[in-house]
Length: 122
Image 1 (cartoon, rainbow, N blue to C red):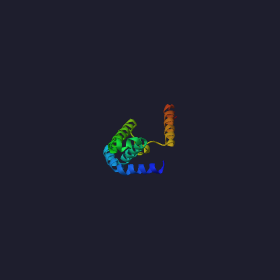
Image 2 (image 1 turned 90 degrees about the vertical axis):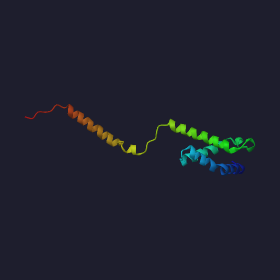
Image 3 (image 1 turned 30 degrees about the horizontal axis):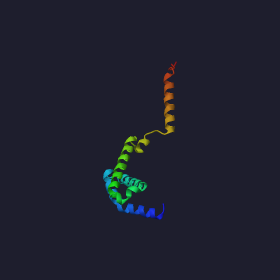
Image 4 (image 1 turned 60 degrees about the vertical axis):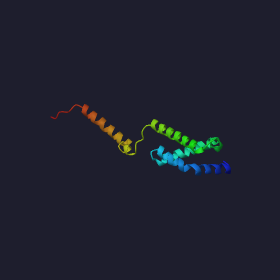
């Protein structure tokens, strides 16, 4: 990327990032991290389609908002397609490998003892 490209990208960011972030916050129910991801992806797509940024073709901001809307929908669909994530608290209840082996050994010993005939005492 040459210096003219950097200047153009900075101007695009300065002109639209604030409005895109506010819009994206509404699209993501106030999740700032996801909203920032939407803005970043929107500006990346805009940069890849620089022909759409030509003001002679019409205003740029409505196009950017449309792209942001599509990015947010795509992200929502992607999250919905994945299984729900659980926290680390669930992992605390899973026994460690050593505990599993010890429990299996206890079960085997208990089963073996249960199958032994009881000896009678004289």
